[in-house]
Length: 220
Image (cartoon, rainbow, N blue to C red; front, side, top):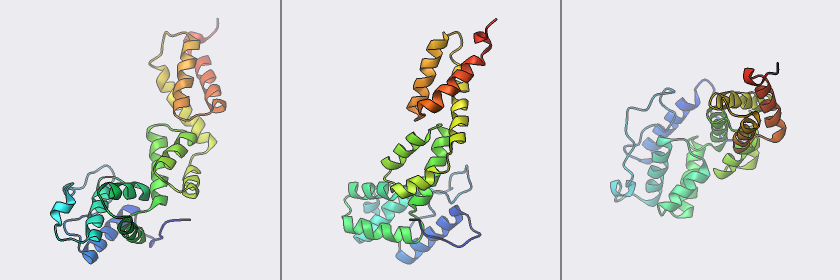
């Protein structure tokens, strides 16, 4: 179960930009620019998204046009899963059949892609927050990602990756725990890793190795 496939040679950001421009031109969504990810990494686009009260800007627009504008605005700010967009459309009063029709079209042109979203979420949460597979799986479920797509995305994180990230987290935390008794340090480290989804069989060997390596804990 995968998202739409596109021609090779273009980056995902370039494909999203082209798809957004083509969709806006073909379907008459005025004032909408390329979505999130179309600007170079680390840079914000040099345009501002349309105002929140999209309906007020499109007084004569039909329901599909209003829904498209809402979705494109959401995607201009950050990547979203289909479930997140469905929730937003429901909050804004869009009928379920309108939402389904618009999101099907967005999926067709590649603007809504749960496979790409899941892969991105796993990479960013594992790198930035140090989440383990168990916590990452919870994040994917929370965003409404299909189980098959979630499992594929989680394959990016292997046992070796979890161990390395746990070691990094423990080393960073220990810098703020100097002078505490070893048992206190161990408990706090275990709690920190547990909150990030690390199982005990991963957490405790990392904690023991880190504490044994501290000069203050070395035996004479």
